[in-house]
Image 1 (tube, rainbow, N blue to C red):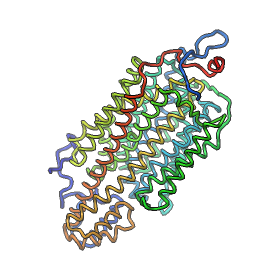
Image 2: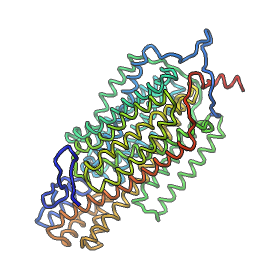
Image 3: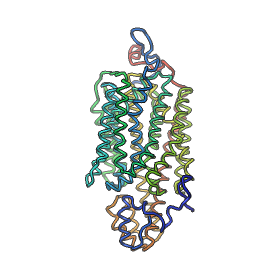
Image 4: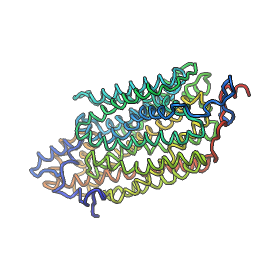
Length: 592
């Protein structure tokens, strides 16, 4: 099959043909050491709540005027301030993924270490989001936005200051986890401020702008990340600092109302949530390295599930829970949350997998990879606006059902085209996938929050975002583990077919899966087995093996989206939430 190159962006090319292929593919860690050893072995160089129901709004005690019936007088400035605050978390989803191959080369990350750079952040977000939402309700939304932005910016700067040496991987992962903690404090408070600044009948539009612009800033991640990485990978973290300064200035200028709802924090629930989620994700993600027969894998998974079961039991019995799980008795809220969970299994991990695919299989530079991911946002940003308008006019069901179906088809076709190694054969499927995700994300998220009293916005946001980020974390852990396993199997099989002895093929696969430790031995073995052809054979084989593994990962994402489609089609109620339908807790208490 002829191999094509970068779509219409540049002339068609054959990126895997040796010996003219450039060194960039195998020069990236963990292949760098393998390349050097093979060059040395052979003179031919390698080529390159209680159920929430619907009803009256709380009224002002003095005049009986419905609260939140009109937008705040400076609602647009408040919206801008909160967009800048959360934009750092959105940009982070793509900009770090693009830089990972470069970081891997400088910091010598293992294959799972690369995934932990992403997943440590996601896991921290998911485990602490509910705590952050509850803390924001108690301490004040504006205050927690400011604190969260400061923590996020400081940890970003420290990630950029990662030292070289043996402790670099641990340093980077630790501060990524703390960065996620800052986001968990800031995001639910920011979202609650936006919701509190607009009446129900304008929230769909406001949230479409919120997620649309923030998502648009996410699309800046691929572009900025590509060019910044070619300067220095450290700059992808430093870029958050000026964004944080702008967010703090706009928040000070907008001065959103500081509403507080006194209460107690559930520290035991927080510890159980962190422990259970952490152990479950640890076992799933490390399974590719430890192996499914290793006691550590199953001990982590079983312990994580047991702690999560304890957490659910504890929350249902507690008078002051971290998560009011009885809120899931509300059918619409439960369905929205389930859809978001399965959607996020695909949405956030796709940036990691697509970025790795573009650089390893397509041989793209970091900046070209940014353009590759930008194709997705061409569909996503457009459909986000459509979804918001549909939510305001007809409710969430139609855009969510339609979006899940479109996204499932788009991800399947995108994955199916990956082994062609041609962007020109993929771009329309990438746009289709973006359209589907864009139709779902804002309507499902906003509809869920429209179902709860305004005094619980922060807490409800904590629940939905916990579901979202835990879905992302599980998706990256499971699919990332499968990617490593499938890629190893593909490499061993493909190299064996080309005449590479099984021992040498196993060594190459180990080098790719476990970073540089086995690369010197692999280089010598291949140099002896293949002679002058070693570079071209290994380069083309690695490209295709990784493409096949990534294809299967995208099939898995399509399955997750198909499940979301079934859930929405079967269980999501029709219609929309009207002004005054959701009662405040005081009203519910009086009725009881």
